[in-house]
Length: 330
Ligand code: SF4
Image 1 (cartoon, protein in one colour):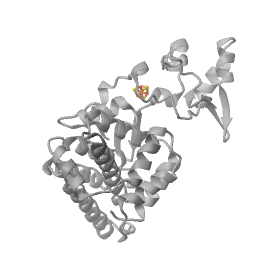
Image 2 (cartoon, rainbow, N blue to C red):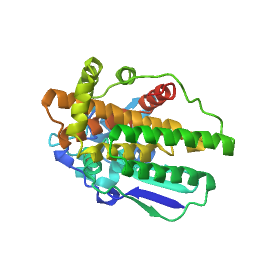
Image 3 (cartoon, rainbow, N blue to C red):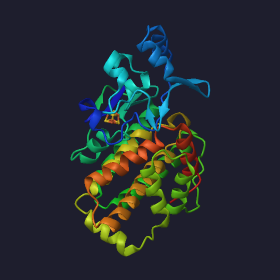
Image 4 (tube, rainbow, N blue to C red):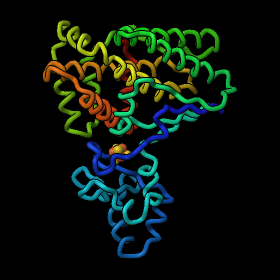
């Protein structure tokens, strides 16, 4: 079994009360069965208090959300269940966040979602982004994906211009998709000819259920923004020594999604998703640069975690966005 994790993985530290976008705000947490059984076994008065804060939504027990905040989130932005009962008795979703695991036959990819501001910052600040490997993958088919992943990382390392970088990555993924079709009899995935532009994708993002006002404002401004080449060129020049920050975002999305459709042999779609998502954040960066005359690291970290918060944890949003991306080129 091959296990991969990013080099920042073991140093995670929750920002707790200092978090600028707590995972306990705006999300509906489903309570897993073991935690629910435990909460039901608790005696009054705390047991009663917990049970009153659980409601059924679409057949599932969920923590109540009051004005966008989890019912257990105290005024100092700390979790009341954590304080009273300890971390081990938080619901499984809360305990595990922001970790993700992508398991296939002989590969396991461990990571943390950039919807967490701490993680987004670690990713963007990386000077030497590395992935740590342990063990070997003996599955020939999965090794094709892993070696594509490594080749994409090498290509990203070698190219300094962000836009060229995304073009190279797309073309490598497209070629790999064709090779999978030719050599492995994988169904030929529709590689569309239609051109879509940034406004089309912004429209799709606007049609999803949007969680935060900040993100809604960014989308509104993006859809009205005029993309003049002088502004784009100015931004490219401004970011010339910080291209690594966007390359890190691209590396994150590739890692996060490359194995998503491995079972179906579809590698082009997740890489397109990675490229389009990073380009949207690049364009949002141009927009902020135009307005403020700068794009600080903190601006970019916020854009990054807002995007991931909106997209990565809603199956519905993710599916709609993937569907849209599958239908168009950029
Ligand atoms: S989003 Fe991350 S840093 Fe913020 S409260 Fe949740 S786990 Fe902690």
